[in-house]
Each structure stands twice: as structure tokens, then as C-alpha cells.
Length: 326
Image 1 (cartoon, one colour):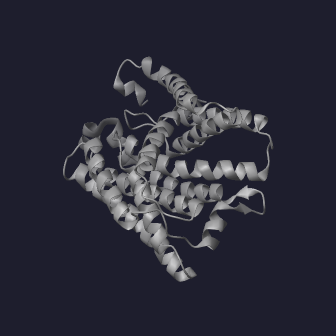
Image 2: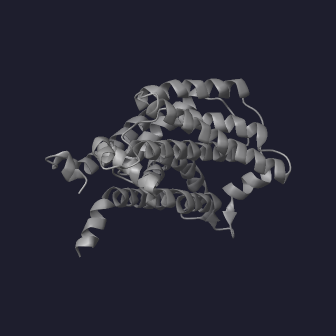
């Protein structure tokens, strides 16, 4: 019984994110003119999955007690790159996908080196690298354009058996084969330890530097996956500064909504995924209820603030930092 209670306490943030998303999506479907149809679910899933990848990228850094302000620009850079190289026959397309993912890993590695070896604050380092990534994206795509392998794009943004959104299946596969093995590995545990108490973890012999570097690597990889899916959805590449900043802020909001502690060391990328899906559903609700555009940011902010406040109730009761990690 004690283990069950411990598991519930550990997964509190993720479970709350699941509940918020389920409630929001039920309200959305109940008020949508078309109701619950495969096309409605597919459209909602495609928009949610795109933000979910960026939210996962942000969650990894937040777990280590940092903030990555370059995830949106990594998405923009890989979107522009994909519009150049993810084209043609199957083999060139596969090489192009590999090139985009390697670029994401390189972006994450640069951030990790600046933070771990250069000892820069994550927020400062990623502001600088974000500007660099956007500059490269602008060189690649000074004007919107390019293309992508349409067969691959249609396969990953369409429906399987005419019902299940392929993008959700792809997201589930990434969680199952990338996130969960990392979370259970020694490097994953080291990343969590770095966020909870880096000094104590270091004194205990935990490989802190390798764990944090791995977190930055996978963060870049997830952001690159988001850039790929953006290309698959739009069939083009665009170096949009506003879009990069928006995805960075939305990712932070999704992480908080998903129950990942900004203090580090607590939370899950799965919670961030459901936080992203919930955040996207809030936007869909505004569309369904025909809110005036000027009121939409206010409504999103209020809902997000309420959700964050609910998640912070447990933190208010904590007398010292160690109790938060029991």
C-alpha cells in the first residue's frame, strides 16, 4: 500500500496534467460542431504533437534545474533545414531525416558544453545559442519556401486504418523507445539528481556532468523532431522569429502545466506531453466558443495560472527542500 501511495505522489503532476487535458478535450468535443470524428481528432493531435515534442525538449532541461530558451529556435532551424534535405527518393529522404536529427543533437551538444564546460547559466547560454540558430535558419530560408517528401509527410500526419492519428503513434513510439529508456538509465537518474541537489549528487558519486549533457543532447533531438513535424505539416520551411519565440514560451507553459517542477528534479516528459496537449486544447476551445482574438491571450493566461496554482499547493506546504523529493 505504501508503494502505491509513493507512486501516486511521484506521478501527481503527470496525473493532474492528464486530468486537465481530458477535461478540456471533453469540453472541446462536446461543443465542436462536428463532434467526435476521426478528422477532428487528427487535426487536434497534429497540432498537439508538434508542441509536445518541444515541451519534451524543454522538460529535460527543466528537470536539471535549468531553462532552455533556444528550443523554439532549434525547431525553426531544423524546419528550414528539413525543407532543403528531406526530399527526393526514399534513400535521400532517410539521409535527410538523419541529418535533421543530427543537427538537433549538435544544437543540444552546444548548449550542454556551454553550460557544463563553460559554466554559463542555462538561460544566458541558450539565449545566445538561440540567436545563432535563428541566424543559420535565416541563411537557409531568407524567404519561406522549400518542400518535403510528401509521401512521408502524409504518412506521419495522416490516419492509420482511417482512425488513429499517425502523429500520436509516432509520439508514443518516441516516448516508449527514447524517453523511457533514458529515464530508467543511469544518465537519466543523474539528470534528475542534478536537478534535485547537484552538490549532494556529486558528493554521492553520481555522474552529474554526463547526465546533464545527455539531457541537453536529447533536448536537441526532441526539438529537431518537432522541426521535422512542422515541415511535414506545412510542406515548407520558414525562418519565423515570432514562431520560434512562441514555441519556446508555449513549451515552458506546457512543462509547468504538465507538473514538472521548475525547481528541478521532479516531473516527467510524459507530463509535459499532456501539458502540451492540454495547452493546445485551450486554444481549440477558444475557437469553438468563438472568443474575440483580443481576449484569447487573457483567457489562456488565466487558465494556465489556475492550473499552475493547483500544482503549487503541495509546494506551499513543504517546510524544507528535502521534503519535496520524498
